[in-house]
Amino acid sequence: MDLNVFRVAIQYFWASHVQSQEIPPTPLKKGGEKPAFLRGARGDKALNQRCWVAILLMQSLRYASILLLIVGCTKKPPTEAPREIKLYQNWELQPGQVVGRHAVVSGLGDLSIALKGDAVYAPFDGRVQPHNSSCVIFSSEEIPVYLFRLCGLRSLNFGFLSAGDTIGSGKELQIAVLTRQPDGRWALVEPSKKIIEQMLLR
Image 1 (cartoon, rainbow, N blue to C red):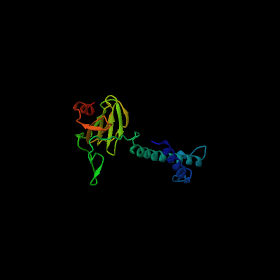
Image 2 (cartoon, rainbow, N blue to C red):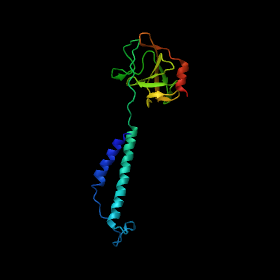
Image 3 (tube, rainbow, N blue to C red):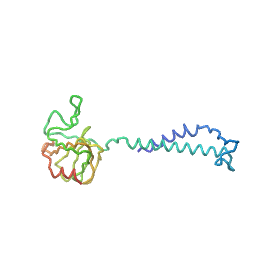
């Protein structure tokens, strides 16, 4: 999380709740006897202040825990730059586009796999980069003439991964394999069953 956000939140709480807090009088027991935890050599007021400060500190820790939970659950933007590719097959509709107010999740050349929440793993040492709103690109120097377009995954891990590391997970995966053409464009080809098995089993 951003430590500056946490620090500012704590400072705000302290200024608005602790420093401006008026210490209320301590209630006495029946008969005017003071509670045992307030009787001491340093005086009732000092002890009373310490008790109230302790209570307010506990409240601040509770708010800090809530803040940590909110920040921790916030979706983090990818740190990798989007990977743009030019397709050899220039079809009108591509995954990630919208038609009739509905998202296109796959296209010609994509293979759909029912993951049912399972993870997808890197088949080689490689790199995961965002491609569009619903797809990422996996590339590897071990097979530089191929790219893998993966759509439908969540909890994505962007950047450089080792073979066997988790790329992401989801209910359904749309995968397309592309090979580089002499003119620099990428053509969709049939996915390899062996490589797909490597991506689904670890």
